Length: 400
Ligand SMILES: NC(=O)c1ccc[n+]([C@@H]2O[C@H](COP(=O)([O-])OP(=O)(O)OC[C@H]3O[C@@H](n4cnc5c(N)ncnc54)[C@H](O)[C@@H]3O)[C@@H](O)[C@H]2O)c1
Ligand SMILES: O=C(O)[C@H](O)[C@H](O)COP(=O)(O)O
Image (cartoon, rainbow, N blue to C red; front, side, top):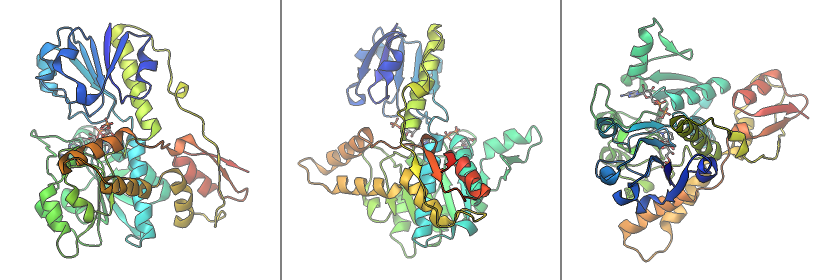
């Protein structure tokens, strides 16, 4: 059984070398000939699975991506030629939700937002949208959901809410203090998302609003976005994803508050969970019982000793939340690394420099862990409510 693996799948070979004969490739180097005699292809979103790529795939029976997004797979073609396909749905949902939380905490610090009195509009209430909703519930921030496909599916069983949260229409989302995008990139069909955040939507936003895109660049009309950002009193915008990656439009950088190179989901847990999921799928395809578990591959972390300013309060103060959470993940660090990398000297054409820098930043992304990786040592007099909040954020809490 020959398994071809994209080399950015962490621990891919360690997971799969007992399942078949494993070879790895760098996404830039993949050509149709390399798929000859390959039974299983496992990749991440940088490999585009097109009809052209599969022209020499004489034995391919299964293609799987260790990512949540699947818009890099031509599923219609795979179905038409009888090749099974799958993904790692939900693997990095918590990572993206934690990315958004860091943005919200910075917005509070910068006085762009009164977090505990704000409303967050979540566009797409799937794995990421739900993980974000859970975080917002844990810290007590109002939010609403826009997800017509889910809303319609739930309505069939008489449900009006998802996870205790109500659905609204896009016009109501457009009025929220924060708008956070978590839909797949879909062109065509009943609920397309391609440029769903269009010129009219963007022009309706005010300078008091914050728009975050950590799903796919194509969901926003980027030309309209740049024009709105260059106008008077633009909204605050945070972008993790772009049109036409890795050859992105860096003109946006001057106008965007935080800019990161499509790493919102790149926590260690998010990526290795993706590998675990595709390993289990491949075991299923070859008829082998999986014997490796996620914890075999995740390193232990040191506990975080926390000094809270108001441990006895019934609600975690936003200052204490910022201090603890930004020890775990701080989007400002990724923004700084990104801007410095793009500003560095080089001997390439500007286009090549942009694409190479974007790709390298992603491939060499730093080690970032999720809250669930940490034991929090809280002061003995910490209230039950504050302990609960940290537990709901995923931390392992104890009083010391
Ligand atoms: N930046 C990153 O690192 C990163 C990480 C993970 C996922 N993503 C992107 O985010 C997307 C969402 O991830 P997920 O894991 O939550 O996927 P998911 O499939 O679990 O959820 C997507 C949700 O969007 C809804 N939806 C579909 N079309 C819609 C429309 N037109 N309007 C409103 N809602 C719509 C679906 O009903 C579903 O509930 C992925 O497809 C991927 O493109 C990015
Ligand atoms: O769809 C996903 O899961 C995310 O966008 C993910 O971050 C993609 O990461 P990549 O495969 O490009 O490393």
